Image (cartoon, rainbow, N blue to C red; front, side, top):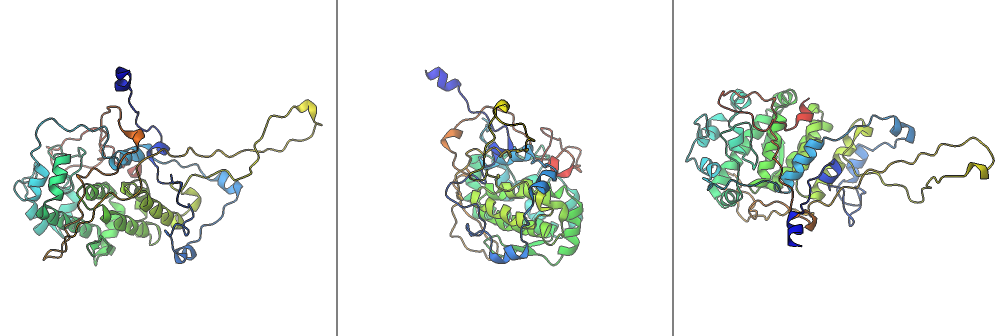
Length: 400
């Protein structure tokens, strides 16, 4: 009996529905206003048109990216198949943030980046070795020399005030590069004074969407989960309503939204996006459609028992597969009582080891599978020493 239990393993999700439990809830209404996610003002500003059955059937059938769904599923569940190296971690990411070692291979210390690179948009755009060091993950990136985070290192990082102070400064440097500014310790953001020029650049240089996805993931790993939703909603607004970065809307909906671990927050963002997405019939990230109550089911009829007459076509609509159980709702992040430092940089929220969400009992073990990289192979590195790892497919669908 013991051998049977030890040999039985849960398989990883094989469909988009199994990767996404955003709309899986028995206790909350799917009505936006009933759930308190969308105000009446938003409803009046962008009413959702009611499409006829003919219009729905004629609309092209768009599909979500399974690669994106699976990549973010693993992130939200703290990489269930990932095995850390048996070698003792040297905490290189933490030591880099403490200004004790430079990033490899360029030999640049973090203080130089924070003090001299802000506003140097050419350097920030064309150098591709620093981003993996500034925003580390438990994933291998394009820079082969950058070290992956470990659970122990995450805990040490979150407990180090100086490292977190520099991390937020690094975040503001990248926000400024995108044309955005950080407003407060809650993560609120707005347009920076340079927004017009930088948004135009952001709309055209789509490889930066890869960087935004990495930044969002790293915020969650290092204790700043609460910073993610304000940034994602801001980017959705610019892409869908203001249309300053229209090329970003696919990445924002396939990737940015799904970096957020709290299921209720994801629902709120997707409802907001659905109100403003055009054409509305192409929005494929909403709740699955349910069969109307009292709908008749076609049963086989013995033609010999009824008079011959023209038959009316009655086609039942297929309902999408309901998403599987995923993470528990609720942000696992514990807010810190630390206040702003002298230079007005917030030191973040503490997490319990960056473990992410609690898993349902059905997700206690998984098959061992080679971890896929989330960096796109299309980004050209400036250094010949950088090696592309694991195929580099991050946000492949959005960039093609």
